[in-house]
Image (tube, rainbow, N blue to C red):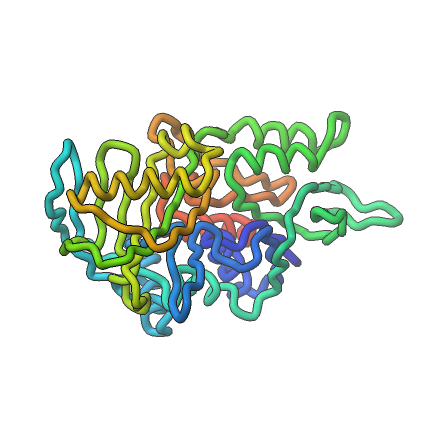
Length: 343
């Protein structure tokens, strides 16, 4: 049995690793140049800058055990951040006993560890699916995947997809057509998806000309245009000669400025930081990245997407469980177990 996994982020990596440990062959496909998905970092000199997920926590027993394995392997370290919050014009300490973890040397390190020695097709955007319910004289039954160059992969006896709902709806619609046996099953799965469950997020990293005078390593911003600030060089293994600050804009502000130019976003991020810290800052350089599907929409509830036993089709992603890296891992493991139970 061979299973195709679309998406090489945490959910896809967890699914692929669970299947491999059970003796199942897998192939992973991702449109990016490297694994990680929203757990991505960009190299800066001898270090990395985290643009997506800033840290993760571990609450469930299963994920705690996984994190302990990553810690032992050296691909994860604890980030003892001094956290603050900003609300109603006031900056104050936000003390808690939460253990926050980061990937080392880059945020995607634990994802890469899960995918180690597994076949991963990078720069490979799956743009079309075809599900063949029964074998013919020329083709075996199963899932066929087609990339942006119309290269065909397959057949696979099962498929796990970790795409955001909007992209998943579009892709599934290519997998079967009216009159074909699987059409009703795919249409039913599409109807379960809530396309607005994930909202956009602009990320801006600013390298400052001089270090910011503050004890804060991270700030949870409760109102206004941004939602998060983090001093990148406060993270273990992210040593950098310059002071780098990562700004995540709020979903509302990101949507409003979805087509904004980098210079506009940098100016807005600078102004927001000066407002919060009550200091004038000078930006030496900036890096922007737009995440179209990133932040959970609190106004939308995504129900569990049912595993389709007939087509051996499973869906995973942090958005199924309310966001967070841990939930991406849990959903990937769950999807893999659904496939394994059907073998």
